[in-house]
Image (cartoon, rainbow, N blue to C red):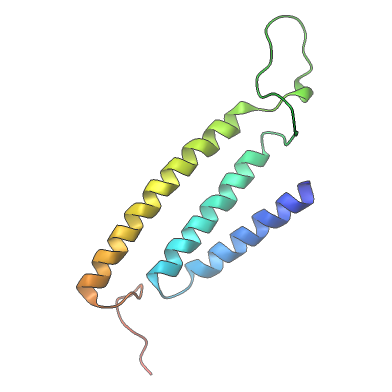
Length: 114
């Protein structure tokens, strides 16, 4: 399970960085989105991946903390998903406005000369 998750995080990070280095704004936005997903998976994996384990410990007595998952990374990822969605929507609106003003969707505002 950990190897598959590490591979998924690596692929998302590599794809996101590759898209960030592209000249078009839409590819940059998708790259930022992929990077945010990779970071969310990384943060989520820090809370111990245990299928079927409850996230909250019961009150009273001694409990074994290794049987429970940490709820803090889950809350952080949930918040990060909402923030990344709002940021992506803002970037898309800015991209559409910049496309209307400059007539191109390149990051530097100019088409490549050939």
